[in-house]
Length: 372
Ligand SMILES: *Cc1c(COP(=O)(O)O)cnc(C)c1O
Image 1 (spheres, rainbow, N blue to C red):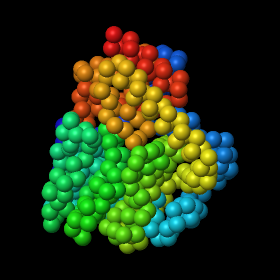
Image 2: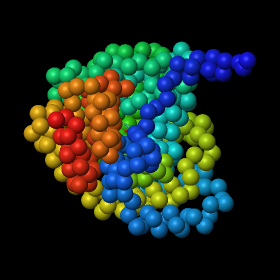
Image 3: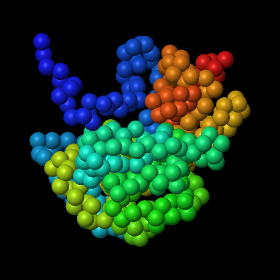
Image 4: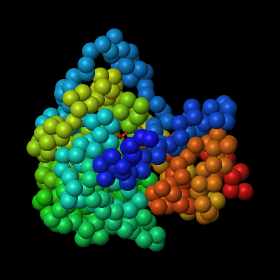
C-alpha cells in the first residue's frame, strides 16, 4: 500500500484542477486520422513566424550547449528601447504565465488574498491557490451589460481588504474578449489601497483595436503599484517558445527577480523575441488581418442569429444557444478545433481564434453543418 501522495501535497495544490489547454493539432490527427485540421483554439497568430525568426532560431542552434543569458540583456535592452522604459523595470518570463506565477509566489501566502473576475483567465486562480492564498472571484458584469461577462471593477474593488496583495485585470479578458477603457481603469488605480499591486494583463494589447484602450505605459509612470504583463505568444507568434515579460516599478522587478528560476527564458526564445520585436511590419500586417477577420466572423455570426461577445482580442466568444461541449465535439470530427469555455462558467459558448480567411471560412462551414 502506498501513501496518499495527493493528501501530502500542500492544501492549495490538493484542491487544484490543472489548466485545460487547447487540443493540439497532432492529438486530433492521431485520434481521427484527419489530414486537414483547422486549429483556432489557442489564440495563436495564424501567420506564424517570419523568415527572420527562423534565421534567429537557426543562429542560436549552435549554442545549445550553453546556458542562456540569465539576465536577458539583449531582450531587455530591446524592450527598454521599444517602450522607453528602464531595463530595471523589466522582468522576463517563461511566457507571461511565468510572471503571473512569480507575482503570486512573491506577494502571496496563506492568509493573504488576490482578487480577480469571474470568467477571467484561468491561470489567476491556479497561481493563487498553488501558494495557499485565497482567490476571490468577483461576479462579472451581467449578460445585458455593454461588456457582457466582463470585469465589474467596482465589485472587484469592494472585495479588496487589508489582506489583498494582488488585483488581476485582464484587458482584454480571455476568454470573453471584453475590455476596459482607460477612463474606467483610472478610478480603480486611484482608489485601490497602496498595499495592492494591480496586475494589468495585456496579453492581447497588440490586437486591442478599440477606442479608449489604456495607455498602460503612461499609467505605469503615474501608478507605482501597477504591473503590466505582455507576451510574445499571441500577436508576436512565438507561443511555442514561451516568452513574456512585465513592466513595473524597479522594486517589484527586484522582488520577482529573487524568486524566478535563474534561467527562466531559454536562449532561442530570447533571440527570437528580439528579432520579432524588431519586425513591427509583421505585427502591423497581423493587426490588419485580425481586425478584418474579427469583423467578418462577427458579421457571419450575426447573419446566423448567433450572439457574440464584444472582443478586443484575436478571438471571439460565440453563444451557441445550446451546450457548447457537444458543438466542440462535433466540430472536432470535422477537423476544426475551437475551445469550449464551460470551465470558465460559460457553458453555451465556444471561443474561436481569428485565423486566416480560409481558416475562418472552414470554421463557419463546419459550424453550419454542426448547428444544422
Ligand atoms: C495567453 C494568455 C496569457 C499568457 O500567455 P503566455 O503564453 O504564458 O505568455 C496571459 N494572459 C492571458 C489573458 C492570456 O490569454
